[in-house]
Image (tube, rainbow, N blue to C red):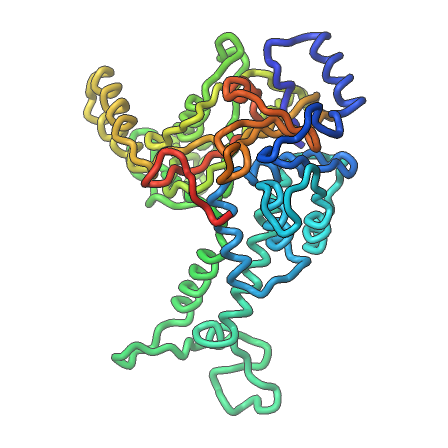
Length: 446
């Protein structure tokens, strides 16, 4: 279980440990110390070590693109009060001072948790992990939408052809069918009279379903495998993701306890040797194989998870280094096409100055599709086996507080400056792709 370290990285030793223990023992205050202003975001009640749930919900509440997508999916289908998408949509509306019940000071996420448990999830509050909670939420949403899409496509069209089975009352009326089995032929014909193969029809149907059930956090990675001498091993393959886990460098390689987010991203896409790779004959490959990841398709919402748990002799420990992250993140140099240009420049044996000039040009020519604005930050206070999650987030969308920042610890809501946010020891970072027409997203269906 990954629990991030104490956010005040300047503190160390016994003082930090004592403060963390005290915080965990008594917990955060259950209400803000000041009266709530009209446009402040509501807090969330802690129903018993549920801060990891509250932290993720507050983080998502600032992601307008995700909320717009979610509301569209709710409108597309018949409302179901117990569905995760309905309960999540309602909760995020409340956290943005919307909803039929009006503004509230503290809201409960328990109806949403009930809907999640109906998916079979067993959520142990003793094993808190905000990163895992995000996975549970996104997976539950995709499962619901996939079931609805399958039900819809199975009523007519290609879905019927792919999934159809023979009625038991007449087992020989159509020889292409067998009771309880899938159809052997597609039954889909081109105008020329040629029948489309069943695997092709199934592939197109599954692709369509995946597109309709993917969340705004879904993107694509490219995976390129080559020999270390530069020869290509295989075509570039793609991998899907809904968040990216970034590892910290070795402790001795971090200067003054601070490392930049850009460094972690560059480490993520750097070439690495594939240990123990063997050929078809079973012998180790010579030269060795290397693989390299890059971002193929950037998602509308980008979640970056920083792995802060380290192990030594099977004993977990905390990584306390501060990751310096920007408010505006440029992802252009980490995408596949940019990596190809960089590799080509290096193969031409150009000078270091020319390479740096290329990287500078890549950044200066970034379009809004490569730029991301920071929306929220999840931080963990405490040690490896205990602690508390808090969230820094922007204010309710489309309100005078939308550009302001707040630190939210369950029901406690306090305004903070951006400078405080950028000093936080992030566990999860939520970015949102900039809209083509503006630097700051301002319009959502929320």
